[in-house]
Image 1 (cartoon, rainbow, N blue to C red):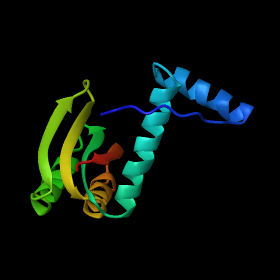
Image 2 (cartoon, rainbow, N blue to C red; image 1 turned 30 degrees about the horizontal axis):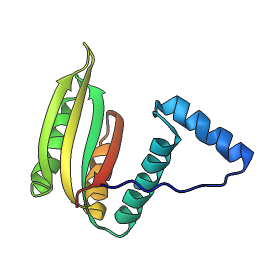
Image 3 (cartoon, rainbow, N blue to C red; image 1 turned 120 degrees about the vertical axis):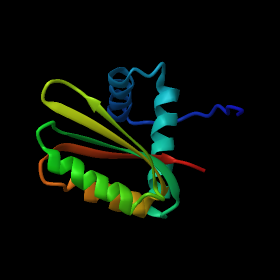
Length: 133
């Protein structure tokens, strides 16, 4: 993809915030950070438009919470056409992490994640979506 250069005028405090963002997130330069921010904005716009997106839902829960595993399995069956894969990891003596790879309309992926994240006994859950097309 060709790159086009252009100038940007920013207030000093916004430029300082951008430089801090570049540093905190390990971007090579301002251009990469700006590219990332624009891409994120475009992806979020696609989510609001209910476009087809790909995503990952991450869940963390205690190993002794077997009811969480039962509920996640039920949701996996309910949304089998949207859940591409599920992988469980042992994080340590107490915790599991499950990753759900998902694809479909952003509204449906949000629905799936909300059902998963609201399971009683879950320690943490998060949905990350990215454009698929």
